[in-house]
Length: 189
Image (cartoon, rainbow, N blue to C red; front, side, top):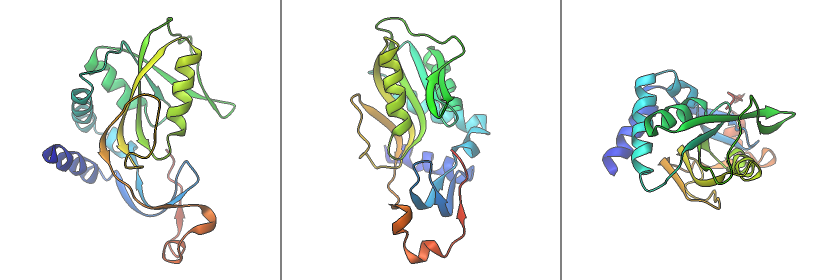
Protein backbone atom coordinates (compact mmCIF):
# COMPACT_ATOMS: atom_id res chain seq x y z
CA UNK A 1 0.00 0.00 0.00
CA UNK A 2 2.93 2.36 0.67
CA UNK A 3 3.92 2.00 -2.99
CA UNK A 4 0.46 3.18 -4.05
CA UNK A 5 0.69 6.16 -1.68
CA UNK A 6 4.10 7.10 -3.04
CA UNK A 7 2.85 6.80 -6.63
CA UNK A 8 -0.30 8.84 -5.90
CA UNK A 9 1.61 11.62 -4.16
CA UNK A 10 4.10 11.55 -7.05
CA UNK A 11 1.27 12.09 -9.55
CA UNK A 12 -0.03 15.09 -7.59
CA UNK A 13 3.46 16.55 -7.28
CA UNK A 14 4.41 15.94 -10.93
CA UNK A 15 1.23 17.59 -12.20
CA UNK A 16 1.61 20.54 -9.79
CA UNK A 17 -1.72 19.78 -8.19
CA UNK A 18 -0.37 20.13 -4.65
CA UNK A 19 0.19 23.84 -4.01
CA UNK A 20 1.70 25.75 -1.09
CA UNK A 21 0.84 29.35 -0.10
CA UNK A 22 -2.18 30.96 1.61
CA UNK A 23 -5.49 29.68 0.29
CA UNK A 24 -9.16 30.14 1.08
CA UNK A 25 -10.80 26.77 0.57
CA UNK A 26 -14.35 26.28 -0.77
CA UNK A 27 -15.35 25.64 2.84
CA UNK A 28 -14.22 29.18 3.75
CA UNK A 29 -11.35 27.85 5.86
CA UNK A 30 -7.79 29.07 5.30
CA UNK A 31 -4.84 26.73 4.66
CA UNK A 32 -1.18 26.78 3.70
CA UNK A 33 -1.80 23.90 1.25
CA UNK A 34 -4.23 23.43 -1.60
CA UNK A 35 -5.05 20.53 -3.88
CA UNK A 36 -5.80 21.94 -7.32
CA UNK A 37 -7.07 18.73 -8.88
CA UNK A 38 -7.78 20.56 -12.13
CA UNK A 39 -4.02 20.33 -12.68
CA UNK A 40 -4.18 16.53 -12.49
CA UNK A 41 -7.35 16.41 -14.59
CA UNK A 42 -5.70 18.04 -17.59
CA UNK A 43 -3.41 15.00 -17.83
CA UNK A 44 -5.57 12.10 -18.95
CA UNK A 45 -2.80 9.57 -18.29
CA UNK A 46 -2.80 10.70 -14.64
CA UNK A 47 -6.62 10.64 -14.45
CA UNK A 48 -6.71 7.16 -15.93
CA UNK A 49 -4.15 5.86 -13.43
CA UNK A 50 -5.78 7.52 -10.41
CA UNK A 51 -9.18 6.12 -11.43
CA UNK A 52 -7.62 2.68 -11.91
CA UNK A 53 -6.25 2.79 -8.37
CA UNK A 54 -9.57 4.05 -7.01
CA UNK A 55 -11.69 1.46 -8.85
CA UNK A 56 -9.42 -1.29 -7.45
CA UNK A 57 -10.36 -0.13 -3.93
CA UNK A 58 -14.06 -0.24 -4.82
CA UNK A 59 -14.24 -3.92 -5.83
CA UNK A 60 -16.44 -4.83 -2.83
CA UNK A 61 -19.09 -2.20 -3.68
CA UNK A 62 -21.88 -2.86 -6.16
CA UNK A 63 -23.12 0.20 -8.06
CA UNK A 64 -24.58 0.84 -11.48
CA UNK A 65 -24.30 4.63 -11.50
CA UNK A 66 -21.66 7.19 -10.57
CA UNK A 67 -22.78 10.67 -9.45
CA UNK A 68 -20.18 13.44 -9.24
CA UNK A 69 -20.59 17.05 -8.09
CA UNK A 70 -19.55 19.75 -10.56
CA UNK A 71 -16.91 21.01 -11.00
CA UNK A 72 -14.28 19.08 -9.05
CA UNK A 73 -15.70 15.59 -9.37
CA UNK A 74 -16.58 15.73 -13.06
CA UNK A 75 -13.42 14.37 -14.69
CA UNK A 76 -12.52 11.73 -12.11
CA UNK A 77 -16.18 10.70 -11.77
CA UNK A 78 -16.49 10.12 -15.49
CA UNK A 79 -13.28 8.08 -15.63
CA UNK A 80 -14.27 5.96 -12.62
CA UNK A 81 -17.63 5.29 -14.30
CA UNK A 82 -15.90 4.41 -17.59
CA UNK A 83 -13.53 1.95 -15.95
CA UNK A 84 -16.30 0.46 -13.78
CA UNK A 85 -18.62 0.26 -16.82
CA UNK A 86 -21.23 2.25 -14.91
CA UNK A 87 -23.62 5.02 -15.94
CA UNK A 88 -22.31 8.52 -15.23
CA UNK A 89 -24.33 11.56 -14.12
CA UNK A 90 -23.46 14.76 -12.32
CA UNK A 91 -24.96 17.36 -10.02
CA UNK A 92 -24.46 21.06 -10.60
CA UNK A 93 -25.23 24.30 -8.78
CA UNK A 94 -28.57 25.97 -9.29
CA UNK A 95 -29.36 28.89 -6.99
CA UNK A 96 -26.27 27.92 -4.98
CA UNK A 97 -27.57 24.38 -4.30
CA UNK A 98 -26.44 21.16 -5.98
CA UNK A 99 -29.18 19.57 -8.09
CA UNK A 100 -29.51 16.97 -10.82
CA UNK A 101 -30.55 18.65 -14.07
CA UNK A 102 -30.36 17.84 -17.77
CA UNK A 103 -32.94 15.09 -17.47
CA UNK A 104 -30.88 12.94 -15.08
CA UNK A 105 -33.00 10.62 -12.95
CA UNK A 106 -32.49 7.59 -10.75
CA UNK A 107 -34.61 4.46 -10.62
CA UNK A 108 -36.01 3.34 -7.26
CA UNK A 109 -33.28 1.45 -5.42
CA UNK A 110 -30.59 2.25 -8.00
CA UNK A 111 -27.15 1.77 -6.35
CA UNK A 112 -25.06 4.93 -6.70
CA UNK A 113 -21.40 5.69 -6.02
CA UNK A 114 -20.58 9.33 -5.23
CA UNK A 115 -17.18 10.41 -6.64
CA UNK A 116 -15.42 13.64 -5.61
CA UNK A 117 -11.93 14.99 -6.14
CA UNK A 118 -11.06 16.53 -2.75
CA UNK A 119 -13.02 16.41 0.52
CA UNK A 120 -12.22 18.80 3.37
CA UNK A 121 -15.48 18.82 5.34
CA UNK A 122 -17.65 16.89 2.90
CA UNK A 123 -20.36 19.47 2.21
CA UNK A 124 -20.81 18.66 -1.47
CA UNK A 125 -20.71 14.93 -0.75
CA UNK A 126 -23.50 15.36 1.81
CA UNK A 127 -25.53 17.29 -0.78
CA UNK A 128 -25.00 14.46 -3.31
CA UNK A 129 -26.03 11.82 -0.78
CA UNK A 130 -29.25 13.74 -0.19
CA UNK A 131 -29.83 14.11 -3.95
CA UNK A 132 -29.51 10.33 -4.38
CA UNK A 133 -31.92 9.59 -1.53
CA UNK A 134 -34.46 12.19 -2.69
CA UNK A 135 -34.34 10.73 -6.23
CA UNK A 136 -35.04 7.21 -4.92
CA UNK A 137 -31.52 5.85 -5.36
CA UNK A 138 -29.37 4.12 -2.76
CA UNK A 139 -25.93 5.58 -2.02
CA UNK A 140 -23.47 2.70 -1.55
CA UNK A 141 -20.17 4.52 -0.99
CA UNK A 142 -18.21 7.73 -1.48
CA UNK A 143 -14.95 7.62 -3.44
CA UNK A 144 -12.49 10.50 -3.52
CA UNK A 145 -9.00 11.24 -4.72
CA UNK A 146 -7.95 13.18 -1.62
CA UNK A 147 -9.40 13.18 1.88
CA UNK A 148 -8.02 16.38 3.41
CA UNK A 149 -9.78 15.57 6.66
CA UNK A 150 -7.57 12.49 7.19
CA UNK A 151 -10.69 10.44 7.81
CA UNK A 152 -12.57 12.84 10.08
CA UNK A 153 -15.23 13.66 7.45
CA UNK A 154 -17.94 11.09 8.11
CA UNK A 155 -20.80 9.92 5.93
CA UNK A 156 -23.53 7.33 6.45
CA UNK A 157 -21.88 5.15 3.78
CA UNK A 158 -18.27 3.96 3.52
CA UNK A 159 -15.74 6.52 2.26
CA UNK A 160 -12.79 5.39 0.15
CA UNK A 161 -9.88 7.71 -0.68
CA UNK A 162 -6.62 7.37 -2.53
CA UNK A 163 -4.77 9.81 -0.33
CA UNK A 164 -5.51 10.85 3.26
CA UNK A 165 -3.75 13.98 4.37
CA UNK A 166 -4.50 16.52 7.02
CA UNK A 167 -3.06 19.95 6.53
CA UNK A 168 -4.10 22.43 9.20
CA UNK A 169 -7.05 24.67 8.32
CA UNK A 170 -8.12 27.82 10.10
CA UNK A 171 -11.31 29.88 10.36
CA UNK A 172 -10.92 33.37 8.85
CA UNK A 173 -10.79 34.95 12.32
CA UNK A 174 -8.04 32.58 13.56
CA UNK A 175 -5.46 32.61 10.75
CA UNK A 176 -1.96 32.38 12.26
CA UNK A 177 0.32 35.38 11.81
CA UNK A 178 2.82 33.51 9.59
CA UNK A 179 0.02 32.53 7.18
CA UNK A 180 -1.65 35.96 7.27
CA UNK A 181 1.61 37.47 5.91
CA UNK A 182 1.24 35.47 2.68
CA UNK A 183 -1.07 36.95 0.01
CA UNK A 184 -4.40 35.11 -0.05
CA UNK A 185 -5.37 33.05 -3.10
CA UNK A 186 -8.74 31.53 -3.85
CA UNK A 187 -7.95 29.16 -6.72
CA UNK A 188 -11.45 27.67 -6.97
CA UNK A 189 -12.57 24.10 -6.65
